[in-house]
Image (tube, rainbow, N blue to C red):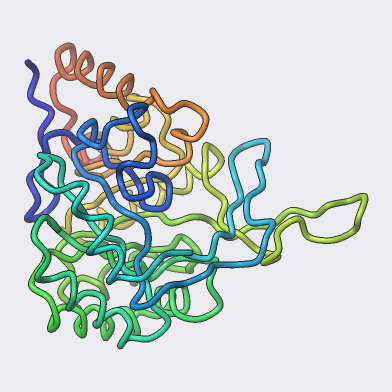
Length: 305
């Protein structure tokens, strides 16, 4: 059997495919359609210190090239996640990463502190990039100083590996990546959704109750590739790449741009069997072409110059 394993910083993953936070629930929402152990890692829904109700509906809108969502990080709070949801994933050989959200630095520290002692949690994804909440989230992720300070605070409260999730909605994503590295991040995940909106023309109003939402799907794939390339150029931190991935070819492209592991999310909504098919095609690619070197496209570019 072809070895698909990869390393994401301290994490050893059996394959490079990762279920993206917000698209795979808590790992069991798809029932038998997509078993959690299909993936090298599962990133569970955003988790706050207390229950969040999310944004008012409508909260989802399909677009010609993807999907807008303004869920607003609805979640039951960290205590229920620990007692009710995480035990379902216990004992799996798939790494479990919990996405951590908050409105204040104290929120992030509180959640990280509680999760740090939970058996079966392999890492935390520090979500500083959600465009769908009015406070916290994106407000932290667009300032280098704020990113560094927040990551340092979380680092002091928890010894688990920290994967910091970056937004593309910034002028210089490389600057934010370096700030996360200075703060003590073990890895980076990028990109989160791109801020967008849609108008209901007949009714002359925004279609989303929150007005703005996060655009995901095929439309943002080139943006994600660009961001991964730029971040790989300025930091040695391993990258979990995501954004519009829907094929093994996409996975290979992301790895060549600089990703050590690759997330798949929105594409699962329309085709739940896709992750298994992607892994099958990826195995065939490895057998035919060999393992794609992480950042290999940078090396080829260097050879040409």
